[in-house]
Length: 283
Image 1 (tube, rainbow, N blue to C red):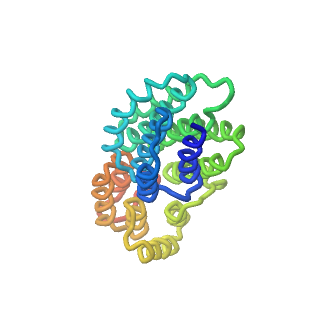
Image 2 (image 1 turned 120 degrees about the horizontal axis):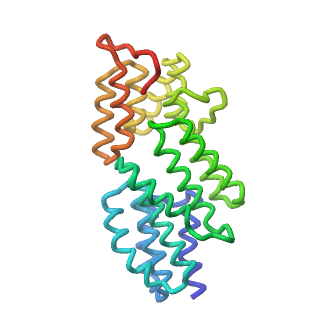
Image 3 (image 1 turned 90 degrees about the horizontal axis):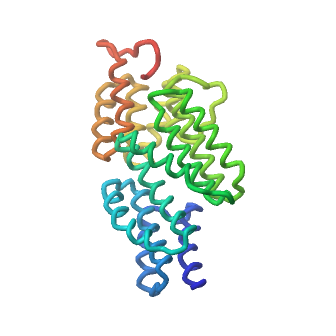
């Protein structure tokens, strides 16, 4: 049994360390299933959760909903209460983000609060709670800077009790989310921490250096072969090109990302007929 756990948790570690994610993780997972028969029910469920994570990484949200529905009865059959709660929490973590990206904000927040309400006397679910708090912050991006900031600070406080490598990655992700929230709301720019080219380009536009933003994004386009919907949106903002912004809306919606499609939609509203941005920021 211990060997089975070690075999499975090696993959968990590889994902959390960034060594394997998305399709690469799925390929390795399927290969390991062929090489070794797993007998322990808990480990079988863990393999299912790893498959669930690959869908999360690849942002295959519709498949993720279906797979969670299949997984839940198996999780309920686990007799160990701690393992059952931990696995259920991980499913809720993935689903809360999926609901958020589909702009089902109330459902996303509901699941986040269910994670926060897990009994956790020994602080075993701190990373889960930090994710939930981060998603709650993200859910207020376009609604309330103050509420979003409150949840970000609570998430960072929660991570203070974590001393594992995953906590560093989670902290960086939360700071990146917070950077975007600050940029959208044009607040707190004096102490912003930026880790992402997209946010850096957005920041450069806001401080009047659109040429720098355009250069950064054009370099990304050459390197990656295309621009993500968000990068295309920011490039449209930098160039004052409404056509690019409209294209980014289509791209977001084709990916099933209705939450962030609101960003270019709000941006378009701010453009006047001659193509200049009205006062008051992006949204």
